[in-house]
Each structure stands twice: as structure tokens, then as C-alpha cells.
Image (cartoon, rainbow, N blue to C red; front, side):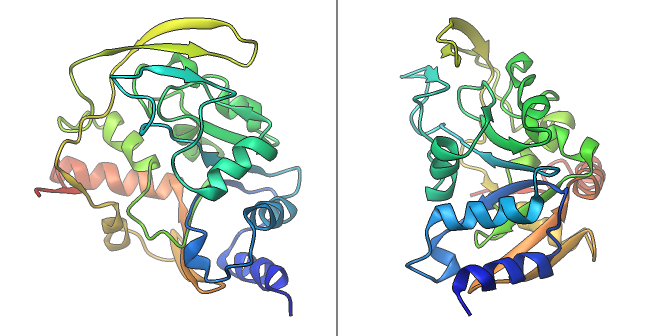
Length: 249
């Protein structure tokens, strides 16, 4: 059996199906198949979802778009979160949301409607972001070989819960260029976690099957999370203990 066939079988067993609205965080290395290309993973996901589904992959750029260099170009600014993200951005995405550090690329049925309003937010994962549209569309989050910690969706929960540690008080003025080469300047309030250690793996203590399902995809541990269930459980945990999802260094 080819590894691409195995990949499709494993993803379907994990619960990915046609019509899903799916946001993916990934580690290509963890899949354990050096010859597997990012294109093959993306095309397998698209084949499973069909054009009635929606595939979203964050194209975060916080490493290069900074207070010292606050410039974002929707066409040119690269993703800093892995090979799958950058491949999707450059070859497959139909739309990319406008945000200097926390943009999301999308393909499929809701690609436009999930990305178009992100420009209205003033924080990274605000109420108009593609991340926060996931619960409204019964979306899922696939953590493909990267564990449960790098879950950007959870920043949106923290922002909505108004935790005191997430968003900084010092604004930053960014220069943004959209797909039509229109340039604007806009003030944002970036995240400001400082030395705090993010512990979104604690979702595993709050969710049960089928809200959080774990399985193997090739050689990687993978998780599928129900976004709406995660949001409700996380908000409840934060109400009881504001710093439930972070540790002191």
C-alpha cells in the first residue's frame, strides 16, 4: 500500500469526512515518511473534504512581522509555522485573511466567508477571525503530529474570556497590503504572553470522545478536536481559574 493511501485511510479513521470545516496544525517531520511531500498531504485532505468542505491552515507570520518590522503583504509575507502551511499558502489557498501576524489561508466552500472579516479585528484571534468562525460552523481542529499545545484557536477563547495575560496593552501600528496592492495602516494589540508557558494540552483533561479523538496518522500522533466543545469547556475552566491554560516559567 502506498503511503498516500495509508494517509487517507488514517485521516478518515480519525473522523475527517466530506463536508467538514477543518483547521489544521501540523508537523510534516512527525509523520515519519521523509519522501512524503506537503502537496500530497494537502491534496489528500482536499480529496476527503471535497469542494463541499473547507480547509483552513494558519499562515502565521509573527516571527517576521514584528514591532521592529511591522509590515505585512498578503501575497508576499511567508508563513513561519512549517512546510505544510507555506505550501498551502503558495499553491492551494483561495483566500488569505488580512492580519499582520495571525492570518489564515483557506480553500473550499466557506473559504471566502471565513477569511474576509478578519481585517476588522484589532487583536490576533478576535471575533471576526477564521479561528472564531469554527464553532459557528461545527468546525474541527486537526492537530497532525504536533501535539495539543500549538492550538491558535485557544488564543481566541482567551481573548473572548478577557484573560489579563494574553493581549498586551501597548498597541502597534502595522502597514498592511492586500491582494489588490492597496496599502493601509492599522493599529493592533498583539499577544503578550511573555515568559508564560502555554498549556493547551490540558484540553485533554476537559474533553472526552467524540469531542476529542486521538489516533495515528502514518507514524504521527494526531488529534481531532470539536471546536465548539473545546470553546465551551475552555471558557468554563478559565472562569474557575484564569490561568488554567498557562504555567509560570
